[in-house]
Image 1: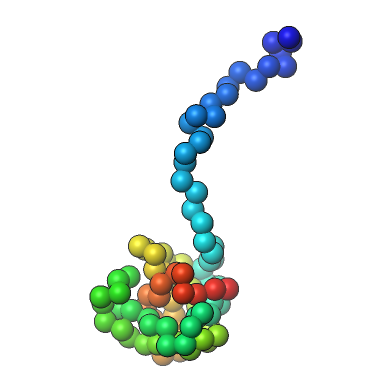
Image 2: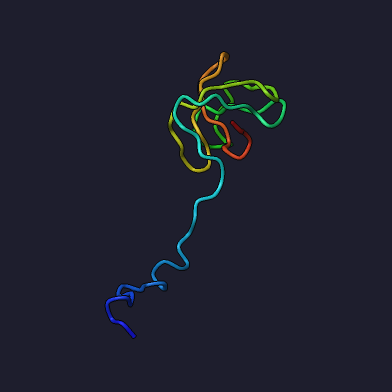
Length: 90
């Protein structure tokens, strides 16, 4: 019953229901690898764009720091482009 000990700024309703971003977090310059063989590197962050290269399972590419629409920008020995984020790991 001590008002000085009572919390005054309770706003649980405002915090609940907020979306949380799940998935791997990559930092610019991270070496990442493909989860499958023949992973496509696209010219744009879209599966309908031109395929500029492919990487093998376990082959490393470098994350360039850009992310858009579920794709991340990478630089590999065969080219630079975009891969699906869910298809790579650190």
